[in-house]
Length: 278
Image 1 (cartoon, rainbow, N blue to C red):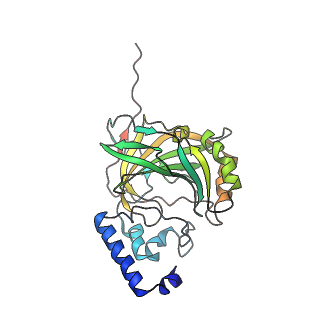
Image 2 (cartoon, rainbow, N blue to C red):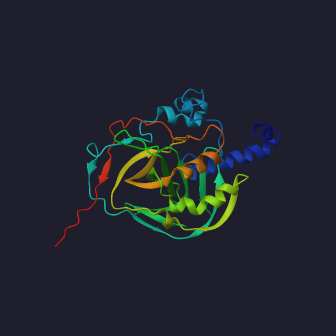
Image 3 (cartoon, one colour):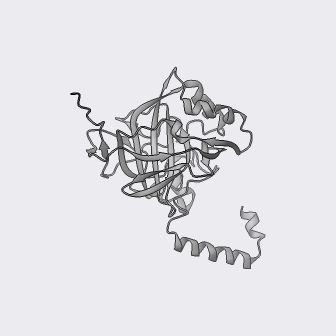
């Protein structure tokens, strides 16, 4: 990218920079809210120079990875969270055209059409993509599990809300991932259209969940992300975990960021509603 830029005419560069400044003024933090695509300048290896502890030193725009106070993922405890009836998770999804994308560090389903939305405190967040981490990034009472699915939603202003779903390994396969297995296996480039995908097949349940404000778990680690983590564990087969690990680039087979400090932030917990029997 640097060589290409040096070959651009200076006037063109100036025009592009001016346009970028106008965009950032019109939509504050828009670029920072986006997850990186196909980035290979960072690693999950704790011993590597570009490992998680050094993400904030790689680029100035990634400084929040080191300096941020509300970073994700975190360890979730029922006794530390404040119980509150936040209501059932308010989402409405529908089938939409999508592609499987290999970003190097993870496998992502990117929706091309309207896949539905999630409503939090009256704000509508549209489902944009979902991707997997192995093992889980968030922990429950210090324990990490086999896999975590992130459903990433955004508003037109690029405010972001992510739903995290935790999985434990089992002899039973996850039906949603199983339906995508042929597409993941035949993926040879970086992206392949796969037709319509129904997010409802993820099997999201919204009766019990944690809610807190955190960050993206990959650079630039932008804060202000509304997190909803479902503590009810779903099931995934070991060969499905192998599928995801084999599909990504070498060195990203384990793509979970280390746990971050809570730093006194408020964590809400919506417990399983009591069902009375007459």
